[in-house]
Length: 285
Image (tube, rainbow, N blue to C red; front, side, top):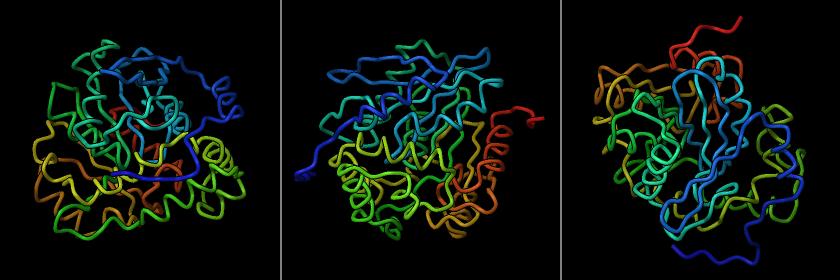
């Protein structure tokens, strides 16, 4: 897909300054012609490769990763075309899954690694988990749209409207108009980092939500697998939950109450508690 715009992908200087407050080390991986960036939070537990959503650079998952370091070693990927990773020129699920596997190999993340993805990242995690041994998968509110299904509920125009606002220079108040429930810090991070997302990557991924089928991979994701979904999410409606359960009776399905698609941002405390449980950890004290 070709997208033309007078605005370009950019990483703001004040966005780069955010990384000084993130308790993680930048790790770089080469996959073909692409340089891929990730944030490695360390920790003594099994690695967890975190794969964010369509317009979520790695740093926007910082508040999630911080809550996991006592359980595991979170490594959050800047998916191609987002954050500090190179853009590339193709953005299919195969491309994204190949990037994830390259990160696992280059960082020597072994077969005990758990793949954890939100939204687009959940689709990537599902495909990647079918291609090499992993320790499990935690998929959060994956888009269930696809061929012959209802369209993805957020339009491309809505995504691009927010992107263009960020490219022109938005702030947390601007983000709050679209995402009023989010914690203020997360509104601020989105304001500074959204312009690092490539327009063509967003458009191609959005098209993929309707041309690539999550259910092609879902029955083959190796156990153990947990699927978290927002109880109020239009992306995983009740009919979708029923189809998910029918295709994988062994999967653990967990609803996050009082949350839509952006589960960790809508209800951080409960979503993070349920995520910790999905990763096999105790509740926080």
